[in-house]
Each structure stands twice: as structure tokens, then as C-alpha cells.
Amino acid sequence: MLSYVNNKFCSLDNAKISVNDRGYQFGDAVYEVILYKDGKFLDMEGHLKRLRKSMSRIDFELNISDSAIKTIIKRLVTENNLKYGSIYIQVSRGEYFRDHSYFNMPLKPILVILTKKIKEKFKIVVPGIKVFTTLDTRWSNPDIKTTQLLPNVLAKTEGMKNGFGEALFLDDNSYITEGSSSNFWILDKNNILNTRSLDGKILAGITRDSILNCAKNKKIKVLEKKISLDDIKTCKEAFITSASSFVTPVVQVDEMIINSGLVGEFSNLLRKTYLELNDWFISKLNNISNLKEKVLIVIPIINNYKIFKDSFYYRDNIDSRKSETISLVNAMKVNVLEVLNIKINNFSSANLFNKNKLVYISEVIQK
Ligand code: PMP
Image (cartoon, rainbow, N blue to C red; front, side, top):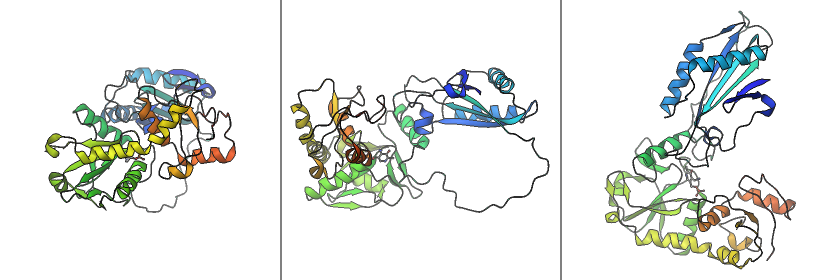
């Protein structure tokens, strides 16, 4: 079947979209479906108009005119011998190395048009169907780490455009939930560490959990509670945590300056403690002499790293743009189950995953 994928005609079997397509990774794309009935496109103008509107609402535009899109659709319909069917149009923001913010990214929207045959002609009279009611939960489960990240993408980019390193989401009662790609913390006026509890409104960050352990080890008091803007006004320090940023100090929230705009000692200490937890791995990496290229070590469970520290896994550098230390920390955040499965199955000299993607394990060393 002829299709139009990645801005060119091709057979559906040979159609290719990069796994770095933002539609694939973030849901950062818009779409339309148009019905085709024996020579006629139903509501074509309305659908194309809404497609443009959707793109403009999420801040990008497609440099292909409506008449060019219609020409593509007509060719697909003709060559695919469509009599009755539907036309699926999708435009993603484009393709680039994964990053929530698309600010200053060199992106070109990617157009996909597919046709689908409907065998029978559309019936005029049809039987009624049964329906049921359910809560409108679109998309209100941020505790599930899905790729439906468009709101996160838009918030992060809006922030970057205005000089902010992260966007903090507020719930209906103006309490902070979390960052667009991080968990949020404050050291309150009583020197107690506050972060929101796992109440379904935040992602259970792996780094958050590690930091809770660090705090426990250091006998730092922690309160898992909702953080209000007033709490921020009076707090001593604030920071965000995530796998890619570990502990990043926050010195300003909206107009509120925290700790006179200076990075606090406590945030620095936590960042150091968190990184030192990983020093053991780094020293091991330095001891490995037979590396052909820059590789990283993945340890199954960071929080229980002592239990697993006898097992080593090599893998490709995941992001050459970042420093080795950052990559190393990222590497340790690799999906725990994946690594454990590898260990259970067969972990010697195996190309276990797509070499171009994150987890290419070339060799395993046992201590
Ligand atoms: N919240 C959100 C919305 C995130 O995207 C992330 C980063 N994945 C986090 C929190 C932090 O999670 P982690 O420490 O596991 O990276």
C-alpha cells in the first residue's frame, strides 16, 4: 500500500520514522482522520483547518500547503484503489535527540498520511450501540511514566524561552506537584526537608527515593507533604531531582528569590552525597583498562547498590553531548528489570538491544 511517511511517498512496508520522532517519544504531534466515500472526502476543509489550528496551539507549523496535502491524499487514494475508507494525517514537531524542551531545536515537522480501506460501503441505517460512563481522566495519572508528555514538553519549553530551567506544576489548590521532568523539594524554615508524598499527583522519582535514603543516612528530617507557594516564600533552600539532573539547586520560583539567590549549603551537600554514592562505580570505571571506546557501567538497582555491586555491565555512551559523569549517572538509572532480565538470561558478549539505542551491552565483567 502506498503511503506518505516522513515527508515522502513510500510503500507502507518500507515506511520509516525515526525513534527520535517527537511524536513517538512525547506525543508531540497532532492528527486528523478524514472519511473517503466513493470520490468524496467528507469535511476535508474542516479537518485541514483543525490540523493547522492544532499545530499552532502547540507552537509549530507545517510548510506544506493545504493544496499540496490534498494532492498527496488524492494520489494515495488513486494508487491504493480506495473506494471507501479513511485518511489518517499526522504531523509531529520533528525529530532530534531526546529532550523535553524543543527550544532552539533544529526541527522540521514530519508529515505522515496513511489510507485505510473500509470494505463495505457506509450503511445508511445501523443498529444502536450501548455506551457506558467513566471518569474523564485525560491525562490525570502523572504517577504513570507514560510517553504522553506533551503538557510537560510545552511547560518546559515555555520556561526555557523565558529563562527558567524548569517549570513547576501546580495542582487545583495551588500546591506544587512536581517539575515538568523532576521532583521538587524545599528545606523549610525549620530545617526539615519537604517533598510531596506519592499521592498519585507526582511521578515516584527514582532519584527522589535515593535522596530520601541519603537523608535517612544523614539523619536529616524529612516530611512528605504538599508544598505551597507560601512554604516556598519562607523556605531556606529548594532543589529539584531527576536522573538527568540529580540534585539541582533552585534559587528562584516565579518572583520569589530563595536564599538570596545563592545555592544553599544543604543542596550542595545533598548533590555531593548523591554523587559520592556513585563514586564507587566511577573508581571501578577508571580501573577498567581494556575499554575500546567510552563505555558506561550499569548497575541493577541504584538504591540497593551494595547488594548488586559485584555485577558489571558495559554499555555504549548514551549521549556524547553530556559529560561522562552525567552519562554514568544516567546509565545507572537504566530500567532495573531490563538489567535484571539480562542477568537472568544471558549476559555474555550479547548485543541485547538495538545498537543505536540506549542499551547496547557488549561485554560483562565479573569482579
Ligand atoms: N517527575 C517527572 C514528571 C519526570 O519526568 C521525572 C524524570 N523522569 C521525575 C519526576 C524524576 O524521576 P527520576 O528521578 O526517576 O528521573
